[in-house]
Length: 161
Figure (cartoon, one colour):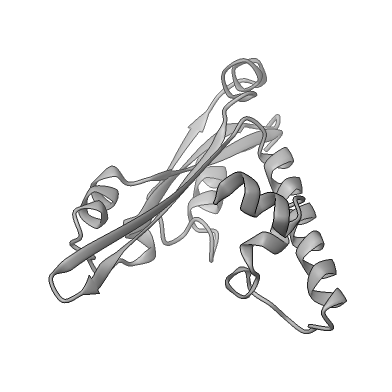
């Protein structure tokens, strides 16, 4: 390959089922599909490139994957400013018979900028945890959301509560 872009798209039918509170048992291939837009290097075999992409373990292999070959000009023109977005949906019950749904969404014009923001927020949280002498390995679920913000607790309370 000379150049490529990869996009992950949620499956609308799966999102609809979860939003309806059905909570289906989902396998990795049920969640989303992948789109690869590829500029071939001179002499590259498109059939072999497509096979290598689709069979890549732990990334493409369990998902429906579409591979499309384009010129460098088409890639630069049509795919250089595609935004990055994502949705996490959780559905359940607050008590028997009472459905609950929470949904988080992100949309970034620049995936690198968004990723950098997450890294900076995580470093900020690690600093705040360390100041309280809390050390070790933490997942995002272990970190108080206020620790991720550049605002003080007081600013957050005044602005958002």
